[in-house]
Amino acid sequence: MKKLLISISLLAALCSCHHDDDPEDNRARRTVFVYMAAENNLARFADDDLSEMQTGSLKLTDDDNLVVYVDRAGSTTTPYLARVYKGELIDTLFMPEGLAADPTVLTRALRQAKTVYPAKSYGVVLWGHASGWLISENDSISVAASRAYGGSTGNNTSSGTGKYWMNIPQLAQAIQSAMGTDKLSFVFGDCCSFGCIEIAYELKDVADYVIGSPSEIPDMGAPYDLIVPKLFDVSDNLCRGIIDTYYNFCIEAYKIKSNIYYNRIPGDLEGYSVPLAAVKTSELDNLVQATSKILATIPDKVSSIGSLDLDGTVHYAQYASHKYSYDMNSVLSVNTSASDYQTWTSAFKKAVPYKRYSAKWMTEYNQLANEMNYFPVSDENCGCVSMFFPSVSYASTSPKWNKAIQKYQWNNVIHWEQYGW
Image 1: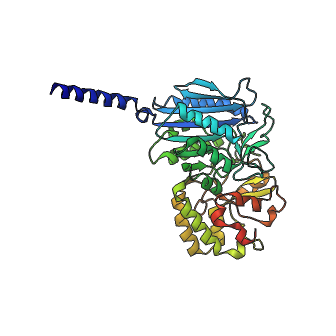
Image 2: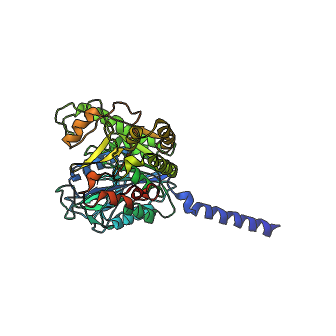
Image 3: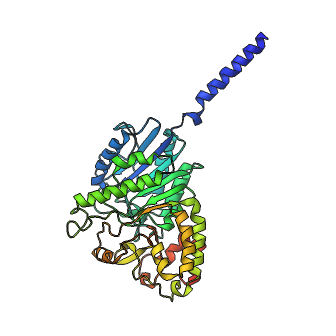
């Protein structure tokens, strides 16, 4: 009996030690990784945003890891990875020099953050320049005629938006490579034109939610002192908290500082904000099927010899003189039958569970600013998610957008080529 008791005691001790050393039990509640691509003309906002993150980190617990990767123009040091903890940057790790627009750099930085700060859930914030789905012919780092995400100058200067960019499919692959089987709770694009259905669909296998704006956003981006705590919400209120905080901040900022947001007349944006939406990726397969079906009801409008009615619809962005970022909800409501649109809307609402619409927002394009005066003032038919609709007006773009869009997984179901594009 004594030997049996000793054996039981030893077994209990071994089990106890194993439990304490189990890495699963030592993981943080959540790690949020902020990727700051600031080797461009946004560099002047990087320090302010870092300061805001430090303020926001004071509201976090020891079980929350806020980790930043910073590549900033004008810095005398190489890019670095650091934890933002109790108002300070700690555990700084200097990384090899490289372009933030390089997918391999994103993979390396995110993988390092995951290794050093393992957690039960993860989120990613993409900070920098972006132009929606726009894609270049080159699938690696591109000196882009069209653009997507990143915008690195490559010479440590802040001259312009940068000439090197990362295509969205490669961004998704970079996250997949770093995260392995751990799916992100969210990707939040704190950059222009990220609220795009083609982007969300590309990220559906790496994140539960994709959050962003289909429009331009203020240069200084999100109010991180307020948003940081929202990034660590593990409840169903995650998306609502991020969106409402951002949206409400811009309402007040535009009112108080209305003359610093590209406005021609101070006060132009009083009462307005930034349109924002959260896409639930588990519902995207249903949405793409529903979208394919409703487009099939209007082949005469979406074909290469058709004429899609875009009058009175909302568009969010331009590239040079081209409008390319139309609200998918707005366009389909105008061009399809009421019954078909109603069926499609039920799928859309499941895929976009939360959104905030603004009839006007900051833009550097005078043409877009003028056209906003004729946008709907109600969000009833505006989904705050953009979609690309091919057009003969894009015949001169480089690369050819009507063909380039077909590189996205969204097109594996939509098949724009069946309409002659």
